[in-house]
Image 1: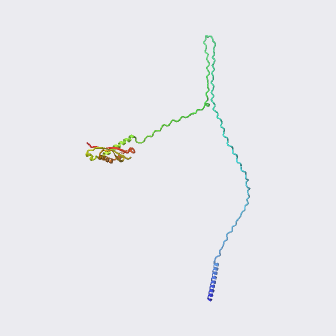
Image 2: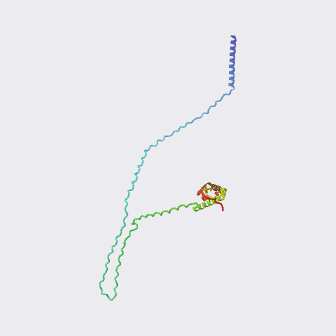
Image 3: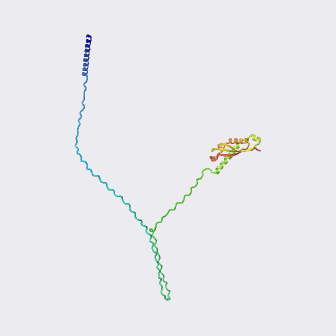
Length: 262
């Protein structure tokens, strides 16, 4: 029990010293800390100015002006009657009164010659013509213009039919020469003394190239027919093709003859 009391007393003394030490530390801090300085904000004086202003009386309200009455639209002018033009006054013809001829009394012929009495001329009849201003205006109708001449038909451009026919004949003759150059007489027909003619139809395009070959009339011998077809296939017709024939010819018919020389 005594031990417990001693411990409690010691604990109290320790607490007291701790409190005293903390107070001393705080006192030292308070002594050595600089005092904070507080600056007072400058005091600004506010001036209040009061001005007395006389109130202007409100402007008197004037009554609204009445709109001016719009004038009535003018009346359209009344159409005036058109007076017909005055008719030209034709003067009355002057009547010609007969002039009495003076008859001289019968006088015995004097010895001296008598002078013949000249008759007064008849008065001329004057007729007044109507003035130009009084004559009625004549309406002049203009004559219609003459019809335009018919347009000339457009002239055909390009080669004539004669030129085309001449170019076609020239191309056919050249094909005959080309076939004759490439023609080979078949040996079997030559040994047997067989002759014949083969009519061929050669189809060409727009450039003169051969596109097909047909036998129109056979010679009756297969060897001669085959020799004619072979000659046509070896022929070159393009160099002899004329530009005039482009689009105007697509085939030619030629005859290949096989004859033995006597």
